[in-house]
Length: 186
Image (cartoon, rainbow, N blue to C red):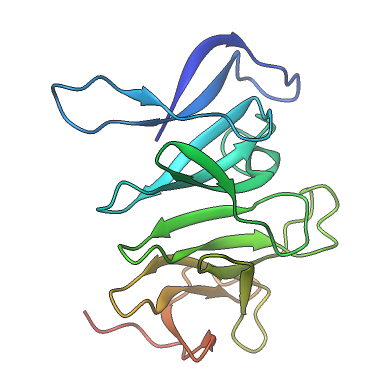
């Protein structure tokens, strides 16, 4: 996850007083450990971990709590070392949500034209080492998509949002594209 520290925030755009950093907690007998900052960014947060100890998250400035410019970079921490996962062309909202045990990372990232994150236009992505990010698109007529998990078969799972749709149903990506707009079977 993430935790505030005692370093004053560089951002005047938000209520955050202190910077925040990505942290990992392994067990009761080991203290919480802060992960390395990426690219000199003052703020970062971990958003997912797998059984191999690989951590994914965001890095940027505390512009909007966690999101927007706080997600200037999508990051994978491999043995504590940050690796930039790239993006889909925008300037913000580059957010890995999960990493499976095979190291496949999924999440969402803005496309070009996001106007410094003020006009989000994110699509779900999949990243497989060595990269780059792969845009998973949306269902026909939708504006946004998010991938939240990669199952054991490394098929991303997520949602595609139609304009005004309050509760988009989940889907599985098949062949690199959203498969359907039907509730997933458990």
